[in-house]
Length: 101
Image (cartoon, rainbow, N blue to C red; front, side):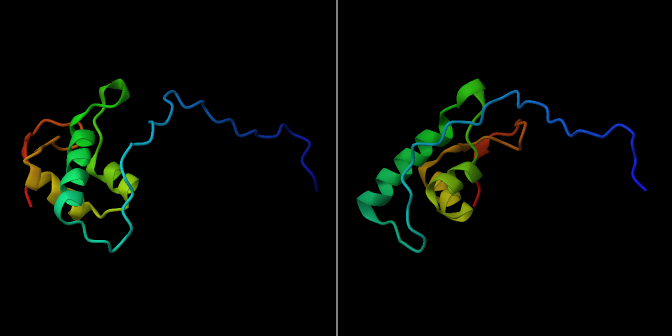
């Protein structure tokens, strides 16, 4: 038996915000150790990206930096801690302070 009633049509709402622009950070191969001047240069770029607000004033998260660079959360967290970067705080952000390791 077939139904002759109206069919439901899936309608998706338009996304009000475009996706954020990709971060301009170097991708590091998994398992590659960063030492010396290469680590310092990488840390400088990561800290700058972490501190600079993106479009609409939203700040870059550690997880976004991980995705952009191919490094683990712990590696990025360590680099930010060593550089003395202040953390953004929990999500909608209130708390500030040094990144604790």
